[in-house]
Image (cartoon, rainbow, N blue to C red; front, side, top):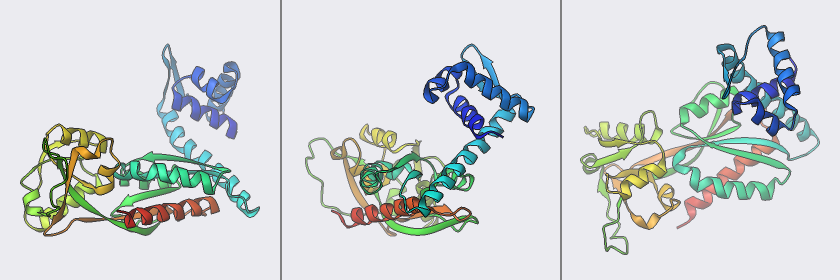
Length: 303
């Protein structure tokens, strides 16, 4: 299988169009179509269905796309590993972050990465812990930050830090400053209308588990995936959220909210970094993982 043909196919499949892929790859469209067709002939499968709006994947095409991404990612990692032998900090690192901390970590991580590894590139995506673990094993991610990670075959998981979870409510009209930071009991939180992510979000599962331990269950007013959408609904008076401090402080309008620590019991959730244990960790990846730890440590020590 020709790697260039595989790269062309993956880009066409991802963009859904030979025209857009031709522009992105800077390859003439007839040449692009010919290479993808040669790949189909070699594999003896139709991979793409062409229509007036672009292309869609056949069942075989969807299967090859899943494998192809991992293959191309692995080739890039091999090239980077060879660069490591020459002492280079180069290549591309794919990092996955949970939505509740993406805004807090993405900007400082990108800034530090560009400063420390100017010859390398980074891509950052958001995802749930379960899906990010799968992408790590398939080669779609190099590093992931996971909530409440458990030992998994094929993954190297290391503790990162713990985050406190807060009850987040709308700031009452006319209240210019936060009230005294009195805590709220978890049993009381269970009686409040909550805007909370759907299962299997790690924070949702952590909240339910801790509430079940004291014999209560959350009153779910709305299920909403995405921190920004949750905070928009809280600001609109739809209910309360349970989130880490940074998710609120890094929002578009943190002054719109009041945060109260949760007690009886206090809610803390553990964060971990994970990489594949089945592939060698490059020097660039190891440096990126250390940067994540450094940035999270600085944020934990901050105000």
